[in-house]
Image (tube, rainbow, N blue to C red; front, side, top):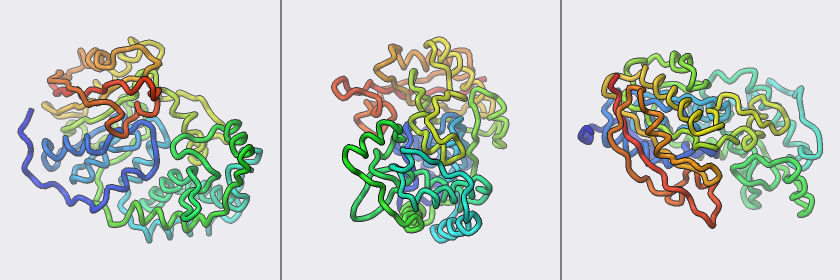
Length: 377
């Protein structure tokens, strides 16, 4: 591997709060890609994450002043990615929110039913629907993209009596509440949705995540299937990518849509739980999953320069019996990526990683691995 770079890249923000603008399952610690890029990348190198999730790799690239692209088939992930690329400030976000509310006075689609009556105050839900419809009509500016992600992050979460930071009745912060369970929970405890000031929550969150101003971002977030070469064709840096840093979905982990259904609704999805797996790797067998992952590595290599580095963090969940290290090693065979080394990354208990949400506490999290490879087409 190359010697650590001694060049200073970019101007790091005083806060990395923007990385946590909205919870998302496929996450790994920001310090993982930061450590790689700070010590080994050189100025001007492009960074790619073909499974970008909520964008820790690409945010790390922004933090150290490198251009980057991320690809993900989830509209939620793509929306968060665009927000982490947004070059904006709190005042612009607040004005964007007011502009949307001024433009959409009477929302056309306000969902009704027991869940919605219990989830949101009757004055809050129409306001959210006005913002939803306005952002679906026009989300072309950085301020509006940042606003959309702020709303996704505040859509549901715990009720704080001293400072309102979420729009919903009492919820867990990460999972979208399943309607039947949520209604039973609220009814049994007589929990009514709070009346909150939507604009004040937006104002508070805009200042939390976009103040102080972030380093200028360069690159793009692509909503697409990384098994499809067309997704990579949108990368103008084709042939110049120097780093691919990613953490693919763990084998057997495919419940992203139902677990994020409320955020999918806000982005234009149905007002009910969906179990779609469109755009996701197939988990029918380790062999099928491995072959589809192999397609992604080939497409990623096609936009890389010779000698580019691939770093994969990968683990497993208990309900699927498969060796995570062998899945990655087998998927890299015949792709043009030559494996250099692999090492333990500890377990999910050592940081906020995706397996932590799926490991039974009594069984513990499975060890994760970091696999390094070099592009030698």
